[in-house]
Image 1 (spheres, rainbow, N blue to C red):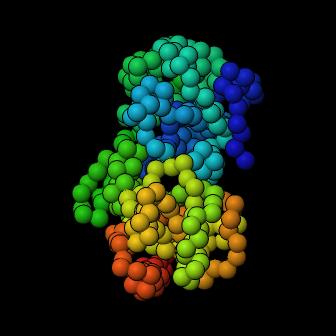
Image 2 (image 1 turned 30 degrees about the vertical axis):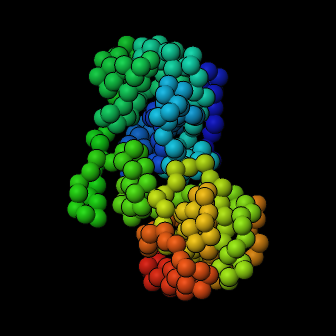
Length: 312
């Protein structure tokens, strides 16, 4: 079980651990590599692995108009950090006062005095402190004075489906998702992109044509409009799902919705929390001449979902 602590009220008996700092949005393969390195170091030294992360993303305060939509909800991030072997999570509530702390103040007041880190593991592009003026070289130069070791983990690279070799980052993964490239996003994430939300009442048209869908309210980044094959996990059980992202153009919709048709499922999903995994892109959003051609296409989508998800 991961421990949640305030860095300014850090338990004395949990000091002296290995520390990783970052937003960790998506916990992609680069994050995983860094945390695996830190976990190994913590185990070898017999100390806890501590992660410091932030909510909201600092850009949400500095440049709200440019704030990225999150890849994960905070509960998802916490669950995944725990699964990766993190012992302690320091969740920093991002404020203007916190963002005004200089790099040296951050190292002296938080890393050394509050947490007492003995080893810091970061990626090559790590920045910290006011205006992100602290960089890896800053971290390394201050290490002797503050009594910690530094390990820098090289940036992860991944080959995409078009054979392009890319540097993995959360911003790249957001771009892939927004362009419907969910298989490539999964390559970078190490697992399928997953939306988590609560099932809410929609127009309820699906049930009238034999395809009742779960209309999901989300606070994460939204994939490109279209139809996808994937899974829906609810109450711990996974179901194949044909997933629609779009405005329901056949019915002249104006608001983008995310709806999942769970194959071979019966039951009431309203108000339940559901995870929707995006595995494969199936087709673009289309406007049909009426209900009958729409139903014919939905049947094809379901069969295509079964085919694409076979063996997954």
